[in-house]
Length: 221
Image (cartoon, rainbow, N blue to C red; front, side, top):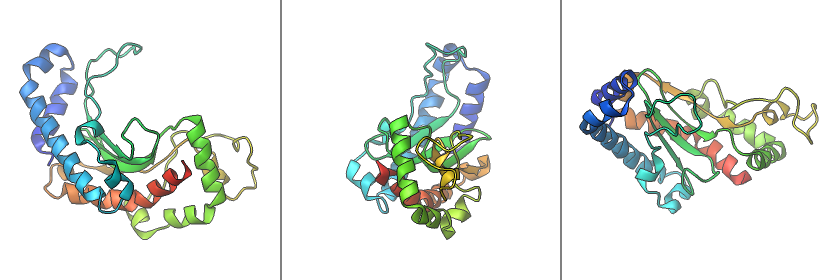
């Protein structure tokens, strides 16, 4: 589980984001990473009970966690480290185009959810076609009791077009969703909830609620 010590490490890293400080506090990082890894291990075990694709993928928990080192080669921001832990669990691994489940741990900004964020053009077009062809099913998923309880804001866009995308009319019943450039959900958590022993159960409820959306999006691909 994630403890207050992990959140404290991330706060301190944000205030001291340089290699010298990080090297001097590597034991704290290793402990924080081990807590994140154990959390992902537990989540994988749970997700395999309701997502057959994840079960069949036999994912390495370590491969689901993003590296803490930032790629600063083409960035004006030269801080060497991310100040959060992020895990993405999807079939085929996090570098594949499939939608999946994610967990972001950051003091004052932790969240979990699922979907596809800023997909490539070909993936986005396949997703739009699936929504247009099965809009009734799409609406049913978004209106589900568990889905609306976990995500009162509904499905969110990672960017949105002003006009309908090429090939779709403004009269299409699904047009507002077809304008989306991605489809994801987000449930925010306080630091107190993150460090609570019941946090795994909280995330499990989030992932279970979003799984029909993930399956729908992946079917398009």
